[in-house]
Length: 407
Ligand code: CTP
Image 1: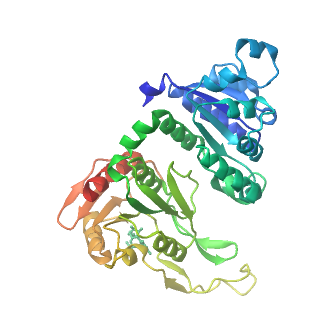
Image 2: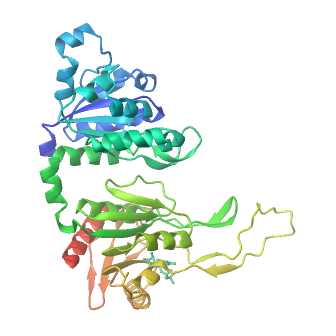
Image 3: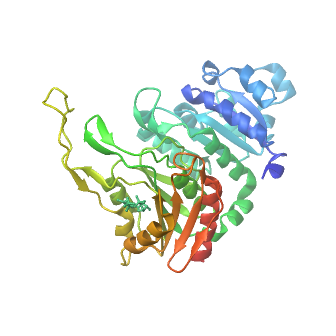
């Protein structure tokens, strides 16, 4: 990819918004991969990042003023719009999206978008209300119909204090989307080969079981292994639904993410995602929840520690593994163990009725919450011991095995 990318060029339009600083990291990633970046900084964008930083990181001139005679003499805006292989807008503000949808051309960024004959990829970022506003949603539909692609936005806490969709996708995710777009349709379809037309359901992260409005029970799962698997399955062409507990991770490119908190919500979202060809249940689901969640914050002056009673949560893996017409063809569970890994995992395989268990020893340093994993793949008739590897590599190998099994 890097070799092919080294002769590619991106025209990067940086719009205004708090997230504009992430454009700098994006430029760094692109340059590291050998992609040429020519930035256009809008007037609003220049309120958030400087032309100097963009220029230093891109090692190119930063364009900004439509009416600069020198630039027009050196490079007209028409030529600028066509000198790249891909036009990227990050962050794409509500204003830029609206201008592009309506064909307005009042400044260099919008003129470029109107004049270009190259593919356009936008990474939107805006306040959640602006994103959900029917006008923005209409504009998105128009642009999608015009062939513009989108990456993000993510769900989460926003700089404006609100919560919801509208956060700029993380730079590594935008970077991946750019690399896919630069690889071109032929490369994309060959890459998507083995799992094209298949639907994968992946659960990931911890669950959060509330005690009262401000407290709850959760665990240390980072979600990394599940997210890596979701991303690896998408890379092989699968349509992926990722049902995720609360984690601080960007959504992998090409993955549909459904955010949940409790085990019961995770079960409902997983059932709603069926039918699926494969289910990979990586989430660290809380086995127990509080019987009755307190409606108001527990106070310590109420006579000693509260007596909490617990009830068992539904087992998502066992429920979806149970035979029936909606059972995924291949059901894969994970087992995080601290001792007798193989024996416990094999017992789990039988108890939960799944086809494979990926077992790991979480006492190994760097596994729980870390970047590496050393796993056993346990099926009914055999046990495979995989070498310790980065979670991304484990995800890639597992996705390959899934593709082979479903073919
Ligand atoms: N799992 C699930 N729903 C639950 C509990 C676990 O879907 N309520 C899934 C996990 O996603 C994982 C597998 O079951 O794929 C095993 O999880 P683990 O926590 O190791 O198993 P438990 O059944 O909780 O067994 P124990 O805690 O006794 O080891």
